Image (cartoon, rainbow, N blue to C red; front, side):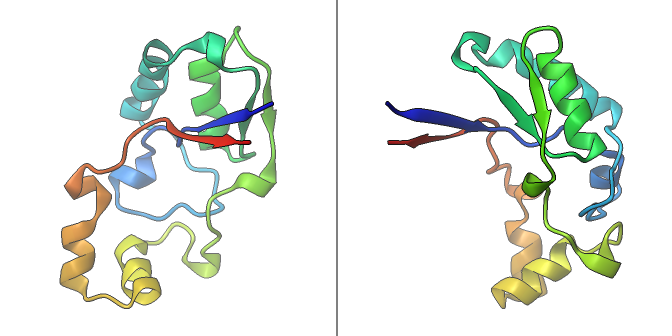
Length: 129
């Protein structure tokens, strides 16, 4: 029997808007993030989903509630949190991390940022057989 995993990221947060890497801070959904989470419900087939698991951070919990409230059981698990940036949680570190971890120039990091290239797509799908 195959297990299908569909991965959704949380809605846009106020930190995202302010170009901060939230890391292990809870973060807060922006109005746009709330709208994204509500609209996601219309873009997916709820019958295809048996279980919802979100990280235990507030932005993920809130996103899951807006999308799946009253339709699915939602579990929270800290093991699927985003990256912990340590002292850099909440700081403007997105591009700095790209430069450090990928050994690329600042220009490349700015040119390739997913917010600029629009290459992120909701609902990345995985199937485990």
